Image (cartoon, rainbow, N blue to C red; front, side):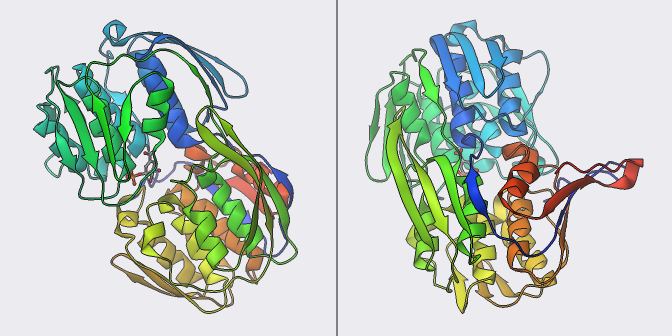
Length: 455
Ligand code: S3P
């Protein structure tokens, strides 16, 4: 799965000189999952929703554009302040054109459930990566509810949603641990007849459930279940989006595995359905302290103090996999720098992310001299020396940022190609990382004769 740009397109490249350490204070951008949801829920709510800390990355901006295209008035000011003038679902109008959700699986899967439930026709498309990602995982349960959604033959986008309504509630046992599937079904259930219930095999992020409650919706939650009664309306509210723990993960790993580092990550969301990366790194011997714990808008938030040390390899408990699903590219790098062997199992979902993250990380780390064997559901990584080299992120924001941190422990420069999509979740990553001590510069490839450093 690649978002590879056509030849002749300029490409963003990270050059990361080896060595250094991470120090000082970093404020990572807003949480991507919450930012998407804040627009979607504010867009269907009645009344005004004020958002602060909104992630102005490509993915969430596509969701924002989509709601504007469906007739919602949204005001944006600098620094992640967004005001949505919601008028309820009845004021939504079909977008005049296909809605392009770019690289975003969250945008596509959640909006499909939401729009199918409302009965608003739409065609949802995406970039080269999103266009080959599996959508039957949502279209199957939504079809059981009565939705009419046409996909391509392989079950992939574009998705064409027809205006059939109302849907009927289902009791859905989800075959994979996926917050996107859970959320798509629950959001369809918001407008279905009866009570829709989703049971998942493992705990996944619960931002949908928490944020809907913030909009005044009753959601019944159990250990592995969530249920929603159809016919409820949302009331506009205030949402403070904390820093994204998934964006923090690169800094957590970089600082934790580099002796001499001491870094504070400010205002990070530490919802327990997202903190698997902290638990995994601590099992590897990382020194991470949680400070100033507080709660903002129904979500726990804290500052994280990380002190560098030599990590050790572990068998990653499968119970932590779904709680750290986006952090494995960074965890693979931590494992490559640790003493001993790290084994990851039960993580087959990594193969259907923006790229096949098991393959992309294994290919790149091998180039850097790491002893890594990819398996169907994870990898076996033997820690050791890391050499410099050129690796391909294959257009995946998280693999690009993960490889960049490996340079802290490498013996030569690491060059990472195809980094454009870092902007989907982490605008100005290179600038923020270099201020913290990573020796990174970003360059546009000379394909159009243009070369420009940004940090
Ligand atoms: C997300 C859920 C996860 C995660 C993605 C964001 C969400 O995907 O990988 O980055 O916001 O619900 P899955 O639900 O497919 O695991």
